[in-house]
Length: 253
Length: 362
Ligand SMILES: Nc1ncnc2c1ncn2[C@@H]1O[C@H](COP(=O)(O)OP(=O)(O)OP(=O)(O)O)[C@@H](O)[C@H]1O
Ligand SMILES: [Mg+2]
Image 1 (spheres, chains in turn blue, purple):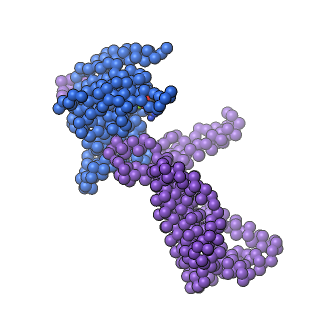
Image 2: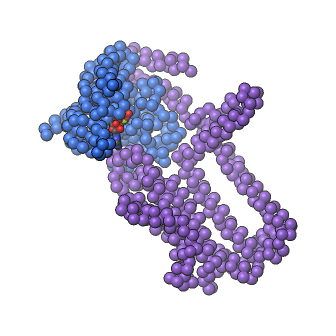
Image 3: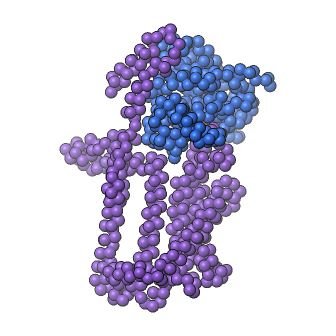
């Protein structure tokens, strides 16, 4: 195995993942290799069930590969889940505070950090609300703030905006891009929305289905700030979609 | 509605394009007001009724039920089914209860009974909690004693007394032994179910934030299991209270007055009024403890947003039913159930659910 370069945040090397045993065995990932640069915004794109969540789980250390290695060179990973996954017994502020408590940060400092993070996602003053008192979009932003509270070097995001209306999602794209620029965090962003991937990513990794393999990697050379409805985004999205269709089509018969 | 969003949307994107050479990100140009405006639409408006009103709403059905019960009791007495020295009426029973409140003996007995209950219950909580955690954690233990705990739970606690009396004679320990055996299995099961049903997603959330081992239990597993644990605690209390009453009737420790001993005493003296007065005492303790558990449970659910939604779902179901029973398309059908009558009908998770939720609650 080659050493991880200084500006490589993450090296995925020959990773496969099987679930189950015997006849019922499913192969979710097949020999996936990928280098992610430090500070890069990488989008993982693929059809439903192609192994995107499985791959994120491996990167975040929630699961171990069957074969191959995931090397983060000691970098801290954080995770933002689909449908916010806030702890329902805590307030918005309490949720953001948990990662800080887990890292042993003192109370006074925690308070300040929570306020800072919540205003970063434009939820200042909402700290005492409980998750059920917030809208879906606001919960997602709390979840975003909580993910940033982990001060991870690599932030994994699993279809974080999948369930939101288009307008809220556009606004959160802007927020995320702004925060990513401010903090310089490496982002691995899973989606099955092609335009979203083009809107946000430096690179787009297209995964094929059953088992998941890297089918193609697209570089996104569009200046930021980007708009999801710009022609450049639409053009690249069309190309990626065509390629995605081919991949899905291979399973159609 | 759609056009509103369209207008906002275009003004927003215009902001981005008006400065093509600008190095600022789109978000810097973003008017925070737009997001705030969206948020304002989304936040449920909190509504709560004054405390006195809520207390009354919670109290009147109970008072009503009590009045009906006393009335039926009185009617049975008046019917002459049994002579009054066997079945006294509520007035004389309550008068006896009232006069007992002035005696030192009553309070001695009450305190001893409550101390026994608390002691036994506390030990049952510790034992049940530890056993429950251990069974939930270790598969071997689960296979070994998991179903054993449930069979223990279904065993009537009275059947333990012969053994308890052989082991401990007629002593406090005999009572304690049975109280613990009565309550601990329910508490252990509450803990086991609570831990088993922690949503795996929340465990992943905890682990992704760096929680392991004890901190995972502290931040995720324990709070997630709390509702089930509380249910186990409540059931455990019911069992320990029953076991204690059975114990005080059977195991009378000389020189140790207790409510159960008083009850047994009154029976032996054919003092029916005394029997009734003791039972009123036991009933009252039950009511008070039940109210405390219910308050804790309600607070827990309210904090997690489970109260209002549950009620709104129930009311929505009722609305649906009333709509079905009215003739379709008739004026009554429209007036009775459709269109929805209150604000609660509009939001699936909206403010109306909170506003109306408490009205249906008691
Ligand atoms: N714990 C598991 N046990 C068995 N099979 C699993 C498990 N987790 C995932 N799989 C299988 O692995 C494959 C990939 O699942 P994964 O959740 O990674 O897909 P995905 O790309 O995230 O899909 P989606 O876009 O729908 O979220 C699927 O076929 C799934 O059935
Ligand atoms: Mg997934």
